[in-house]
Image (cartoon, rainbow, N blue to C red; front, side, top):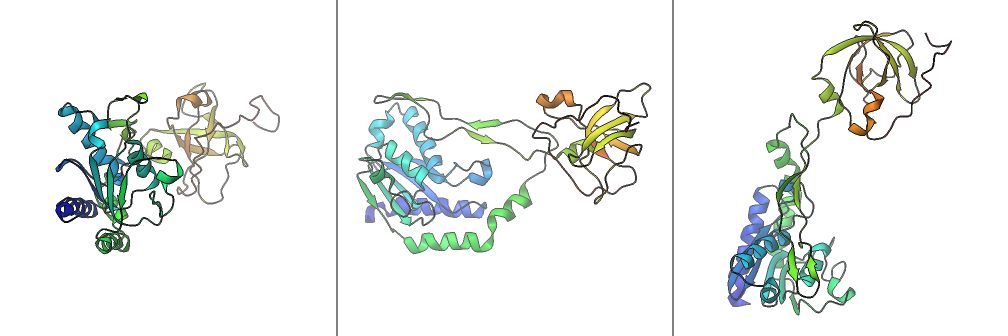
Length: 311
């Protein structure tokens, strides 16, 4: 282990880098024939992807190294050692076993998600023969100290809130990186060991989206207090048809009554609900308060036929 101390020190350098960026301080390196072929530290918050652990980052880099050097990752991993500051979780342990790494050397045990004995022994449970050697508790105290600093300071929330910008758009999945499919002589074609790295930024609320639109005037034709939706007759459109609405922004316990004049703003809704003509409504002279945003599920229509009880 004395000759390998420099590799473990590199893993700790990566862990400290993770800590400085508000990530869980875990660092990892993959070493093949005295050459570091993969480095990684936690980037879960950066990618907003719970799978982006240090091991996943290191494996992505190692696969690229194998491809660049025209080497089979199967042959390389059989002679590769993984150094990581904390016991791999069950997900990462399963990947390590699947990739048939020669050795694993880790720092402190992972009492919450450990995959090499602390919570579940993935190798023993699923009958894997690799890694052939697992060395635990290397620089354990230093590993624990880094984790204590992270959780005591609450850095995970502070960094994100200080640096993350609120978007004005609603982006779909943005694929940042993907390891191409790999050929495995034992299993033909297999998927990458790490998933697509995707980043989905915060989707503006319906209230925020509606606030950007023009103001319309109308009169409540029908309102179902229990379901929070009904119909509004536009007053600023000649011969405008009644609009099916969901009241999503009202003051306190107030409920619209038939005949009430209201101001409202149109709000785009998911395509599958387009025919409902749902809108975001702000009642006249009322302070926005209670927000009922139920747009993720269909809203059943009340009877729209003329009714003597509704003007």
